[in-house]
Length: 347
Image 1 (cartoon, rainbow, N blue to C red):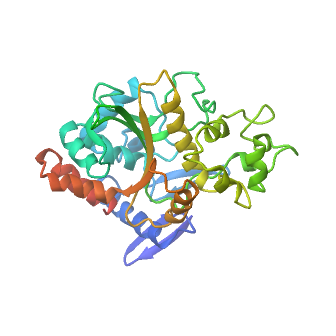
Image 2: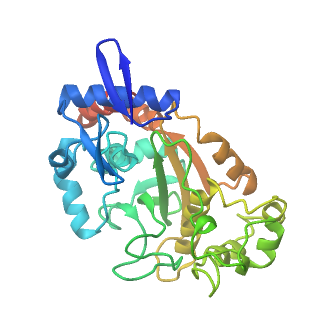
């Protein structure tokens, strides 16, 4: 924890923040103090409770702050139908999970407006498929239930691949499609490979050179009986149109060791859902939505575009694009939300 002082205001925040993170964290703290409380929350570290002004007190986290108040009941109802876990830092003002819900759920309460808005960034979209999922969406989307390990064989009580939100829609040919979205607010990188640093690794596992892993997936801790038994590489092999083997093998080390790991897992989840004969979706694709001033993620996204030969199944957009698209519709039912969202997240 580090104290930052600007004028007469003091901010107890994490150390080592980038300029963008520091600026947005301070803004979020100012918003919290003006609209919610001046009290801070605490994070337990090595047996000590450390105060952070960017975190909410426990009672406000229980109230699902800082969710947009008109959707709180809807989110709780959705959670009963499609159980999902709040992230560990859901009580942080910079929670990407909360920011994602705040961005999409108010919009999806109005399917006609949502169709117009989302079509502006996804031209394939003809209508929201409100007869699928929970009136067209699912928070923390994954296709399994209960103890099912899912199509990637990686889901458990403490881990597993899912997307921040899934949106069902029909395209202009009437085909049912699914749009998986990962949302980032202040993160400087995507989630990296846990297998590369796992204590369960043996001498059989290694991450370089990439050509060896592409040729023998058992070298990857995620794959095979000696590792986790996840199906990431099996799905990757089935879809050379998305993951050209020559591009993967040309890397000095596994391309999915760093930040591309989360992009890879979301993409193979999309492909697995599309391949599954028990799933109704004819096409599934994946996007990243990020804050317009967060440029730290672009190198990893660009590397992923190049690795996948700029495949149209992956793209990215900003939260500002969506808010501006809402405002351009002139929809009175979302005008208050748009102003609120802009004010909270400095969009």
